[in-house]
Image (cartoon, rainbow, N blue to C red):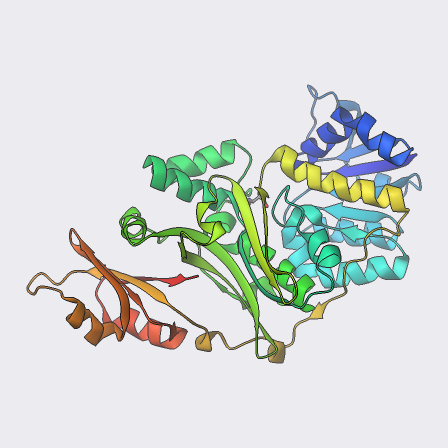
Length: 405
Ligand code: HSE
């Protein structure tokens, strides 16, 4: 019998207990073995929960219990989640997690400890909620050189952008709604300022390119500066605006970043709405493949966590082998200033003169599209690098700029 300890009985932790209970039969049929939740670690009591008898408050009870062979870390945050995961692995227990903060910052070390101890450290739920993405990268695409990853990796911000643009609901109201639905992080700044997506693109890049960049070392912009006016102007030119995690190899070096992007209607990411995530991967043999599904929420995320538990029980710690990755050195990381793409600039129209395409070209160089609406104007430029875009931004009054995908 496999005995599980769940660390953290919040949204995802309680979801894991629910999935393991509700789908007990189907899981155990597959395993020919019982899976039992032995402990639930949390600071709180849950007197009304059917799992209240399992709640404990001392991690050492789990650590010192040889019967517990799998620890499901659903605490969120770096500490004590990292410390408990490390201690569990060192004690010879496998660990599964949805905690992208820990995986992005400490994954290299924890994977190496797991390997040394002959146990598993699995994190399918850390990226894309319920979407299978870690296994496909490591297994199904293993004969490819991954060339590029573009993903809508944060359910909360996609939900906010969708509701703001299609229903005109204001930012704070939609954010509260996303929190009530259990999509947002405990501190939702991590969602809306792009850090959650940064952690996820760093994890995908590490698996695809073999080097783990720290999330704090990549360019990250969230959605707080996006205005409905800009989204409307982009829409008129045929683009939707999404928060995109992007990573690729540039001359053998890894580029990774998170920012709002204009997505053309021809790109399948453009139609992904609400809490859904989508990850578009390009491999040199397979071409483009897209992974789509619920990117956050209790049961979808728990579904992915439980897949890792089933894998470990089924294969007795000889579960999926995640490729090893090492910490990226400065020389592994591409120069962000040189990153080049088309740009969408929106800015105040000059009150005294009529803005024409020719005048806009003097400021922006070659332009692909030009639109004015109310007191705003917008252009789509030819590709330019980050340095040039920053210079233009600083020259113009009330100018905002977005990258195109
Ligand atoms: N806050 C995260 C999101 C949860 O909204 O995507 C899933 O990782």
